[in-house]
Image (cartoon, rainbow, N blue to C red; front, side):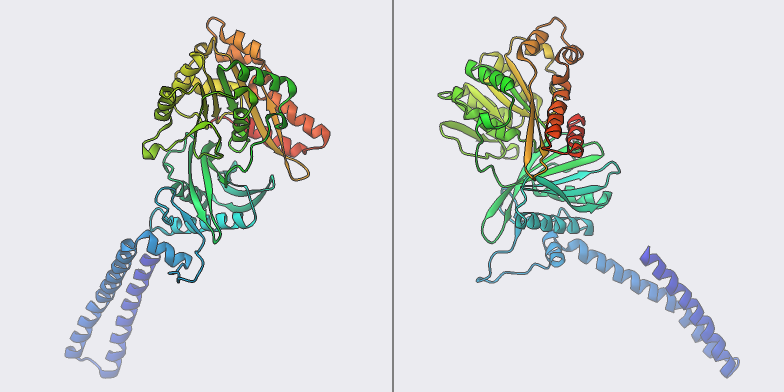
Length: 460
């Protein structure tokens, strides 16, 4: 638009200057055929020559931008320069595989600005000792960036639709995620290098009601809480321990990203009921090294997808599998088949309720009838911000006897599960737990409503 306006102004100036000059010379010297002819020629070619000059200049400017690499353009925009030997290393985001600094997707200004913002957000989050960075769209499709600091969320940046989408793309590019995939959950990561250390940043992308959301976890788990101290109600905890003691069945840990599923999984693995078991875990990344446990790191880009690693662990004699995130049909089929054969499987799924989990299994062509005869426990969980700044967990577990009898019913469907499981299947049990925290004064009513809105949101 700016270039077209400039051409119009040049053309008008050329016409005005030519007419004015001719009139001025004619008034001063009278009719001069020879001089008039040269003036006409000059006026005729001056305008096109000026237009041609600006067009050539524009083409060379565009070519110089296209020939610049993303690294050069990003360095020019961010003001980075070559470091001297005695200077400390600058803050950088490093690729997980190559350990090279991450640069924008392309040389477009929006991509460069988004990557510059990504660098600034992670650096600021680390300086403020944040545990999470969350990027979520609101009902209008505009994005908000939140930091979770000591369990409490605070909004940091508000972005419009396009800048927010560019920021999500920048982080997905940094974490080696598929940028065009917006329907399914993806996991990846990158390193944030500071002067003192390199911090691993785990990125989870998932679908939201008005777009796509990201959760960036800064750093690894530093300890494993005891199973008795997670806050699981006594009745549900007894059912979980009974299933662990049986040594066979399927335990599904349900919750949205950031709900604490990974901590729960590690607590289950360290429970005394699993002592002496041949355990294999499958994670991306491995959060904590466990003794006497075979831990596999999922890397689909490096030739180590979950389904392949599951087969390798089963062939090596594992009798207990713990899966960080179950997210594809082939791996789900292997896990369910392993549980049907009399072994134990503990798996996380990005679902908030049992009914949502069964709906996801049906999409993977694993119907509720195929779970008949498998001892099962589906533990739903969520985290809420306490009024004192910490976090409070709520859990819900459908009755194992009712769940087992329903799954063995001839022609069982999700509607029958909904009818028989009641509030333990659709998230109402979690709502009761949140309301109890409100009544105790632990959390606010607004926080309970926010968490429940997250739980009831469909589609991850």
